[in-house]
Picture (cartoon, rainbow, N blue to C red):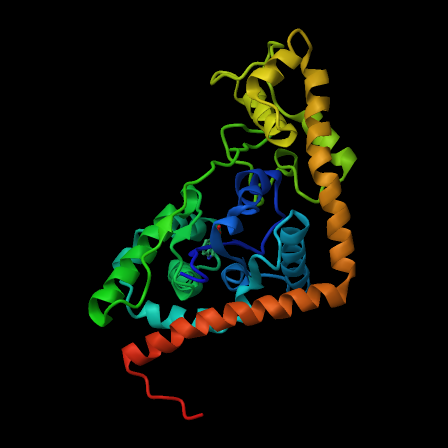
Length: 334
Ligand code: TRP
């Protein structure tokens, strides 16, 4: 508990460009969580280097991601928005927890298996211990809740296992986190292959709408989105392309599926796709304006970063001190 509120922790990696799927599925739902929870949202840049990064590009991406969090509406005063790499306690606790994690457990992680298949030229130890660092992220802040998608559920499970194991040896050190399954975000699929999730790592750039895409690009991608051979705008399992566009349209416009189906009754896909693009742009345009303002204002952004780094460090170090003591490290004379 912090300030009588339960703690919620999440973050995104500073790799790739955020997509509309990241926004509608996750980020958008984060915006109001601070009303009920003490929220921490990290830019998970330590995790990013499990895959080789170009330094200049990486630095820019990480800064853009933080600015985009704010531009999307995350209040940097009410939420702690910070860089994981600025709080060294993450790496320290990560190491300690490595020593409480079994290789057998890590061998079972499906994401590790997938990623090592994809990056077979660089299967580094960081990729392997990635879930342990993630456990450290969560446990450092004594998080009660972690909003995670399906792909991260296994990592949350191992976090709970590690925490329970540690607690069983040393007493009540860590809060055991639970998944947060509050308001469900929209599930946005690839525009080119609606059986796949829209992803920032998709090689087909036409499959994803990136949050930084300009108006014309959004229109072009929506126009090219796969549909089907009839012309009915209807939400149905056997119409995955159209259903996905409806999901996007309703999430961006605030209308219900029924309202949308009625609106496009008797109209063709062409008209529908343009309306989808317009709805998406009505969400993205104000975000771009905010982003431009924030990213140009170095003093403002640096101020926000400094304050939030300090706040994150304060809570993280509190837990780390406790862990150091429990494990039996000698005191650091001050
Ligand atoms: N692994 C997460 C992802 O790729 C990012 C992440 C790192 C994270 N540490 C976290 C998410 C802690 C939630 C909590 O999506």
